[in-house]
Length: 216
Image 1 (spheres, one colour):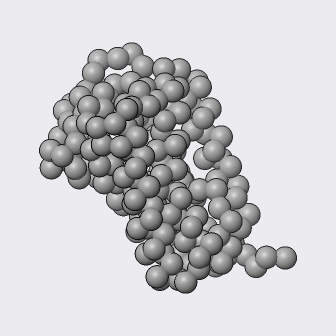
Image 2 (tube, one colour):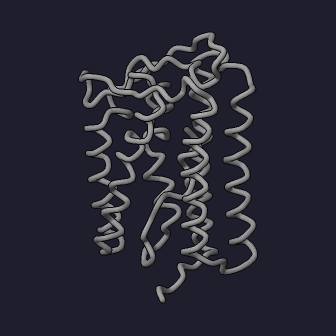
Image 3 (cartoon, one colour):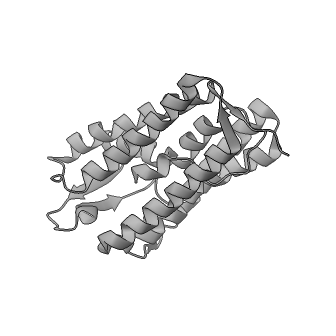
């Protein structure tokens, strides 16, 4: 879900560009998914369902949404972050965020998330209940905002406005997706999902206008 693009649960008080890296890592599976959907590597079906959270039937995830591949991507992210910063602790957190996407998804998805390509699928199905799904989405999102705002401070006015605008667009996009109609077709769905890439440079831009608070 798009809400997962929000601030993650961290302890990254000494990380550079922490918000940008967190958004990129935590949302990497959903960033890559529409690209592979357009390429025909992965597939999804649109279904008629009164539950707005169950209008997509995820048919095939050979790369993006299986636990083993996300774990490998996490190793890559951790190595890349460590190479740029030499911060082992923050690199580990960044790397763990990638497969955390699968772990959080498995709570809400119906059984369609493979452990490895072609392997057994998992999913606890919280999406079958809209109130439960909203609770599971909103509470961690609010907790992430609290952690991030407690760990950073604005460097200038841009840092304040850009951050809250980022959150506002995320919340508005998520809220508007619930009462709206299902996507017209999978191609339109994939093209629309590519908008998620906008949030990555936006998050890195926010980092340039916020500072990490010193530990007391």
